[in-house]
Length: 497
Image (cartoon, rainbow, N blue to C red; front, side, top):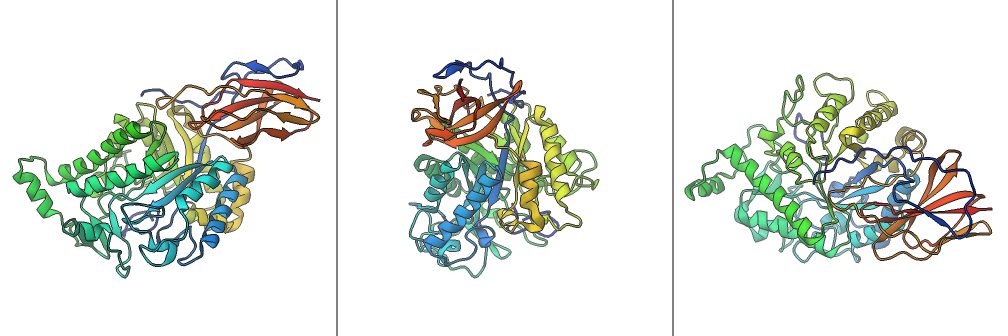
């Protein structure tokens, strides 16, 4: 994927449209009396945008920075990432918690990941996912739990724990090159993957489930994926699909099953997938590259058009200008497939930043192109990966802060999941340079504070749910409650003298 391991030749590693929020209407410049007065829901708003970053744990790409760090050191590193995200006005953490049949959380099914302690199955002394959620909430950052559904081992030298899936189902775990891979065609493996993911949905207060592009493995020259016995058993039971169609159907079944299971368990949890950036060669015309439909047996166009996903984040890991693989042309193609109005968040290959072929300007242009297609529900970007920002390569932090994301923003809403706004804030008062309000109800995730500036309103800050006061300079302000799906309430307006 999202660039952990990449095969030779690869670039890496219902129904409601959600257009951008229009510029909010102006209010008369009159000074409302105290306490606050209420404006209708939707009267004040801002341009929504999904601003995500992939944090890869496999091979210690992003976090933890190396194996064997103490719990305190690991937590400090993750806080550093989250603090930086908050400073740069990013709002979504895509955290890899299952790289290869392992867990960076307290799983009752799978062993602790070796990328934490250096030994698979050894507990790190805390629950990293629970910690990430708790700290992200303080900073108004969504947490999307990133799973690799079928990879079983990355390194041939890794010692696997007794409860690893390869020991539970050795008959369905195959060596493929230097890796181990689970068989997506085996019902036991499909059930296992589904159970593992739904366990996280049910036990953790996550905002989203995120799958990467590794379904069937990227093809290796001269190596055939060894699922002939599973396919033969399917045919002997009366199956009629070709091998390629059968493999695609295996993947489609998992995606549809997860979509249904997540909705049934927690309807508010988003489901997103980040496929390889090219659907098929020639789509759009002239595009060349890997055919994921016939190589990875993934059909993300189908998932999007069936509404099985809430967002798709195609990995558009090419520059804008090259004709054979073009960020601009591919983004346009993916946006055109989106008949149900699901969200498209372009995946951007920030790790390529070198100041030569890939400049900071390239990423500014890519984000600008994503925004230009907002009416087609291109509503954000996800960057790979966090270490580029952590290291401030070529001063990229300044580009994010000053050029890309100078102001905070909530993620875009998903009306097909929930479009009911929360109750507005209560007890809002202004006194002595301070706005105060009552604690919110259980469904309140945070607060948005706007300031009137001439004929318009400007989002000043997004506050976490535990905040109940804010020191501000004189002016007219509007406070709105925000629920877990980023719906905003009616606004309460106060004047601070």
